[in-house]
Each structure stands twice: as structure tokens, then as C-alpha cells.
Length: 178
Image (tube, rainbow, N blue to C red; front, side):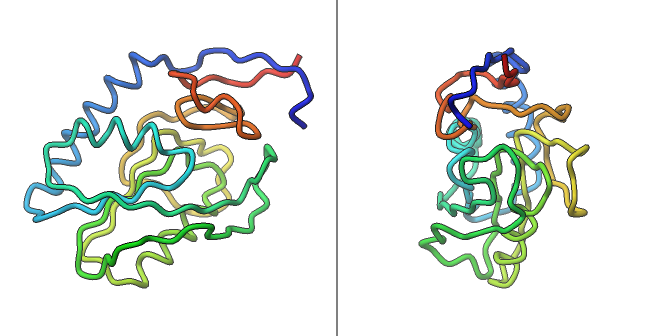
């Protein structure tokens, strides 16, 4: 699939992303103002830029952990089979947890991850997604906070890839095949 020529159109600029992350950080601080430590769980790999920028904006005591789940592989559509490729290192029982996701598309990945994490009995479990694509939703789920709602485009950049390419773009771009 990656040998198909494509171009990328800027959908959300780096400046707009940065401004929205500042707003989201204030909302998260308000929700977790009483926490002794917030466990921020990044869903790899697509969320790594988002989680790094969000953490720099949060004025809270935080611990960072990662979980890697996959339902796409190198394809452009979800297989609907979610596999956990890397689990958390730490315990979350009785703790405040914020799951950071790059994009909620069909909802299968986030639903699976939240079910797994809820079974570990966290004190509070909230979610934030940089992008939301509700038109593709197949599972009734949404993030507590969302950066941007986007139309049904295949997107790359700001940590999100197409067959391991374009993660390093500082913006969110829509893939257009030529």
C-alpha cells in the first residue's frame, strides 16, 4: 500500500495544535486538582508527540506509563481485532489515570483499552484524544476531552503514521492519493 503515490494537505497546523493543548491542560488540571499523582498513560505509538506536549503544559504531579495496542498494522482500516503489544509497567489500582490517545476512529482500540484498565480498579479513569472522527465510530465510546473533531480523512503527522511514515510532521495532514 505504501508504494501508492500520495500528497499531504495540512488539516490542523502546529500552532493551532499547541494552542488547543494549552486549553486542554487547564481543563485536566481542574478535573485532577486534588490528585496526589496523575498516572498519564500514553497509547503508543501515535500519541507520543501529543503526550509529550500535553505533559509540558500540565501543572500537576504526574507519572508516565505506556501501553501499546494495535488494530491497524500497516493498513488504512481497522482490523477490529485489538492486540496489546506492550502493557503498563506500573500498577494503577486506586490511582488517578488519564489515557492519552491520538485518534478515536472506530472506537475499538479505546474501548478495549478502557475495559482492560477498568478491570485494574483505578480511582478515576479519564481519556483525552487529540483527534475524534465520529463519522467512523462503530463502538459507542468517546473521550472525556477531545482536541479536534475531524472529517473522514486518513490523517498523518504529529505522531500519527501511514505505514510508519510521516510521524515526524509537526502538523496533522490529510492523505490524498494521487
